[in-house]
Image (tube, rainbow, N blue to C red):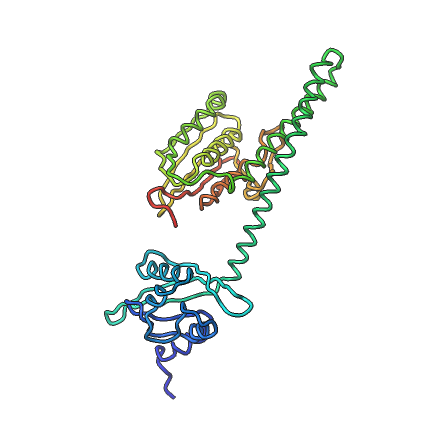
Length: 364
């Protein structure tokens, strides 16, 4: 028995796929559809999913009067032109699932000198609904964090005010122990205030950020160095930086990132004057910024913990801080579609690296 050639087996194999697939010529005419494509069109009887070979897919979608049809037509044209890799569309369907989401992809290829396109629809309704639930959950958590942090500020302000009043009014009547106890209470209140303000800033990264625009990171760094001028002078910190790029981002939030990373580099510098280097490199449509110090370093087992809210590796007596700065930095970088990572060895210093979209070629 002679084994069939691989091309003869392809139609049968493609018919088993759960993905709706068709092959179009360069003008958009359907030359082939698999079983999933045909069944979907027959079940839903919608003009966006013709199941007949010879129909022009572009013409059908462009003739549609529905919003979904127009979106499909525009997305398909962009796919065929190579302007996009994929398009997500909401399709009207029959049955209990009245509307479902599909991922539309198009891959061009040539055969015998002619250009063709493979079009495929994947059902992503479950993923889309999960993302919607996750977004709603995140929004509720942000609202809770904002409300909790906002409402805690007033009673904390009252505690601090009365401690200050107690110290001023009865200073002559307090012994050394009582004065020390008040100092401890005031210090605790101030630290709690910093934590509440940090939580408030963390909860508002997504909802209260400024619109994305071109941001000159050299100007951002100059502002941050000015803000940290006294601390830099007191510690003898030496900060060197490459010429930094212009990125697409929120200037106010990116300033927070630089300020937190530089402040951390100074705080955890060890015994000698801090040495800090800021470098950058282009990777495709993004810039990678690295802040490197020669400080005490971080144990490998603790390197993910430092990005958790209120996670501290040292006591307040050893190093100041609210324990939210790095969590805030990561959240800001993620809002910009990037990642913030750390590379460190105890006693060998630390490098924090984060990616941002280039202003001249932002990612879609």
